[in-house]
Image 1 (cartoon, one colour):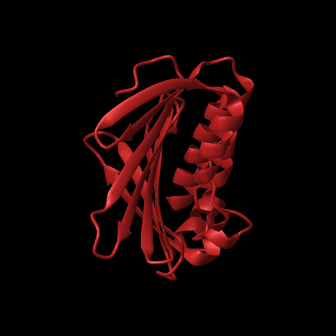
Image 2 (tube, rainbow, N blue to C red):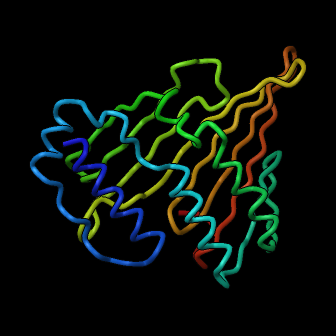
Length: 205
């Protein structure tokens, strides 16, 4: 069943990236047998490829990009150009997701919500000292297959006596948000939030 879900997600990925609503080809009985036997246990959702396709779609579109910055309870908004968007968006594609290291260094768990027909895939690092600490991919039922609803990442690192935690949320075809929290021993934690919206809708969901 895991391979079947992966194939459905691959179909959703192709739909989002290319705008092609074709239904993915059904898996063969042999493939299902291999999946049940654990032969394809490392067939993770292609998080990096999906996010790169989303970024490329925004790059090549003529949609307005509006950035909202929240700091100390105050919100500023401004329209930005593609280069600034790319600088923010590429933070969603850390090196831990690429070059085969994702499948090697992370484990996968999945939760299906039958009420909402959503599936959440959670990826956790084998080495707890890695910068990338968590990846969640949430899918929802589409017309023909599961489609990506959102991607969530948590990253942490140290810089001198500071601990920096980032929570990154990508809402498919709509917006991205980066929340950065800085903790310094003996001082109050600081928090900044940057959100970019590109589908022409309101900044709030």
